[in-house]
Image 1 (tube, helix red, strand yellow):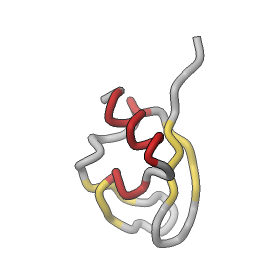
Image 2 (cartoon, one colour):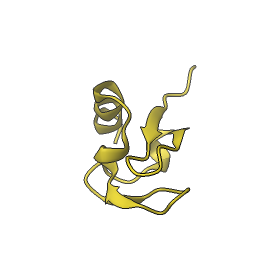
Image 3 (cartoon, rainbow, N blue to C red):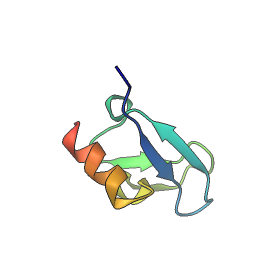
Length: 59
């Protein structure tokens, strides 16, 4: 079985990374970039609409 992940991209520092939906808070919650500590709703960190849809469907 393949593990699902979402791709994230900080809108401020442009750091990109991947994470499993189970390791992330709700897409509506405030999230902090691990690189620059920018704070925004997690939905704003998803790289694409597909990543956001994946996150929403698995939480």
